[in-house]
Amino acid sequence: MITPVMPVYARANIEVDHGEGVYLYDAAGHKYLDFAAGIAVNVVGHGHPHLVKTMQAQAAKLWHTSNLYRIPEGERLAERLRENTFADTMFFTNSGAEAWECAVKVARAYQGAVGHPEKFRIITCSNAFHGRTLAGIASTDQEKLRKGFEPLPDWFKVVPFNNLAALEAAIDPSVGAIKFEPIQGEGGVTAATQEFMRGARALCDKHDLLLILDEIQCGVGRTGKFFAYEHYGIEPDVMCIAKGIGGGFPMGACLATERAAKGMTIGTHGSTYGGNPMAMAIGNAVLDVVLEPGFMEHVTAMGQRLEQSLLQMIPNHEDIFVNEPVRGMGLMRGIKAKVPSRDFVNHARASGIMAVAAAGDVVRLLPPLIIEEKHIAEAMDKLSAAARSYPVAKAA
Ligand SMILES: *Cc1c(COP(=O)(O)O)cnc(C)c1O
Image (cartoon, rainbow, N blue to C red):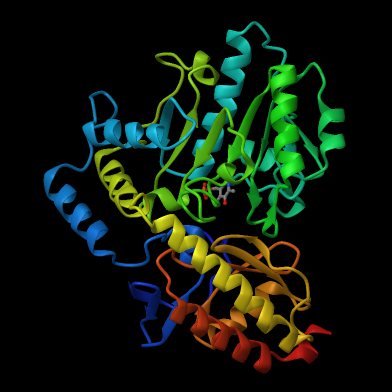
C-alpha cells in the first residue's frame, strides 16, 4: 500500500527530533554533526536564539495578511537586500523553484517590453539544478530529473557548463537570457570559472540578454561573500535566492535590476503566501546575523580551514576518496568519492555526521555558517571513521 506521504524520497530511517547549534538529535538519542544543514538552509544552525525569539514574537503578532496590503517587514527586507546587492527590486516566493519560475517570467517580460518577444529562450548549463517545477526540470539536461515527465517545454538550450565557446555558439535570435548557478550544488559542487562568468556577462551585454544567476544554494554567505557573484567582479541582472535566506523557514526571492524588471508591472505576477509577515520577519532575523561585521570573514576562515583539513584527510583514504582539489568555495564544499556518494553519506551517518550526496559521486559538505574550528576537527574524525569502516568490497 502506498505510504500516506507520497513516496518520492528514499528517506533515511531516522526520526530527527531536535536540533541545537550545529547538532541534530534523533528520537533514539543519537547525536549528529550536521554538515548537511537542511541542504544549505540552516545557515545559522538550529535553534538560534535570535531566530527563535523573532519567530515567537511574530507568531504572537501576525502570521499572514496576503499581498493585498503593505507588509512592513517585507519592505524592510527588500530594502536591506537592495542595499547589499546589485538589485533594485525583488519578488518574494516560498521556495527556490518559485524564484526560478519568477526569473523566467522576468526574462520573458523584459524581452517583450523591449520589443523582442521572439527572444523567449534561456540558455542553461549541463548538470544544472533549478528545482522540480516543470520549468525547473525543463531547464536542465539531468536525465534523472526529467525522465517520465516529457514532453517538457522547449524553452531552454543547455550548453556544457564552463564552456564559453559553446555558450556563445548557442546564442540565436530566440535567446533572451543566460542562466546558471555560480557554483553548481546538486550537480557536483562545480564552480563557474572566472572566464565563463565574465564571458557570460559580456555576451549578455553584447546581445541584450539578461544574466540570471541561481544563488539558491550558494548565496546568503555560504561562499564567504554575501552572494557568490561577488567573487567574480560582475553583477547579474536577475538572481534567484532561497534556502539560506529563511534559515529554515520556507522562503525565497527573485531579485532584479530596475531595467530587467521592466515588464513586471501590476498584475503580472503574484503569490498568496510569498513575502508573508512570518517569512519576512525571519528573513530579517537571518540578515541581522549574516550581515553582522565579521560574519563573512568567519565563513571565509572556516572555509579555508575545512578545505585544508579535507586536503589532509583525503590521501589517508585512497580507496574511498579521489585525490583531487577540494571542490567549491567557502563552506560549500565537495569531495569526490570512488564509491557511490549516496551510500557513503548513508554510511557516515552511523559515524555521527550528516552530509549530502551530489551528482558524480560527490560528497557535499554544507555546514551551518556558524561552525567553529572544533567542529571541523570533529567532522574530519567522523568522516575518517566512516571511510575506514566503509565496506569497500560493496563498491567494487
Ligand atoms: C534547492 C535548489 C533549487 C530549488 O529550490 P526549492 O526550494 O527546493 O524549490 C533551485 N536551484 C538550486 C541551485 C538549488 O540548490
